[in-house]
Length: 164
Ligand code: HEC
Image 1 (cartoon, rainbow, N blue to C red):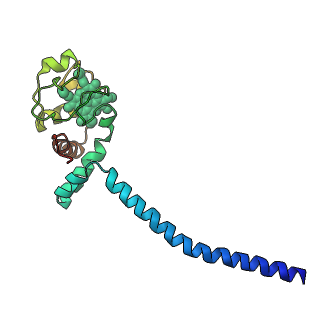
Image 2 (cartoon, protein in one colour):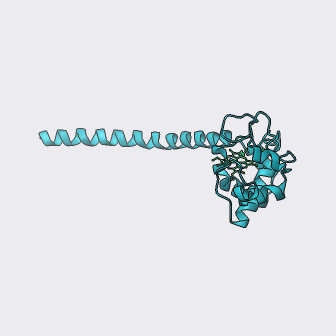
Image 3 (cartoon, rainbow, N blue to C red):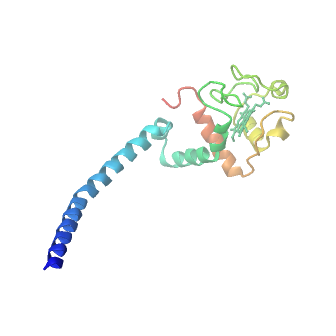
């Protein structure tokens, strides 16, 4: 008799729990899904850029972005100098060592290179080889495809206002 009571209580509690669970679970999933979609959409600084690109170019851009991920440890795109390297905002067309507010090395300044696709590729393939004595301590990008993708990405993302 006693065991029957316990049994039925346990059973009904369990059933109560499981039906609650069944109602709560989809709602939770829906909520989390919505939150993560919004979070991803809001947190991608390149959303506006990506919307302007076709599928092939977007893929290239994203490959370049992935490969250039390490650059942002030392550089930013905000035009500020808060990291060890100069901001890369507006780097295209500028001479080496001339980033506003940045105290570049004599080597970078006297090299007086105009940054464009070609000079950036030469520099990023072998930073110390191309500008001996400069202070950028970063291994070169040896893979040509990766280098081309990084250049493609930089050309877009370093343009002032590109992310708006
Ligand atoms: C460990 C830090 C570090 C990393 C990582 C790094 N850089 Fe640099 N970079 C620097 C420093 C420091 C300078 C300034 C060198 C000087 O003045 O001698 C510099 C200079 C440059 C310049 C020249 C800027 C100018 O105004 O003349 C470019 C372009 C550049 N880096 C691009 C990149 C890219 C692209 C990446 C990623 C592939 C990268 N850097 C990774 C530290 C870094």
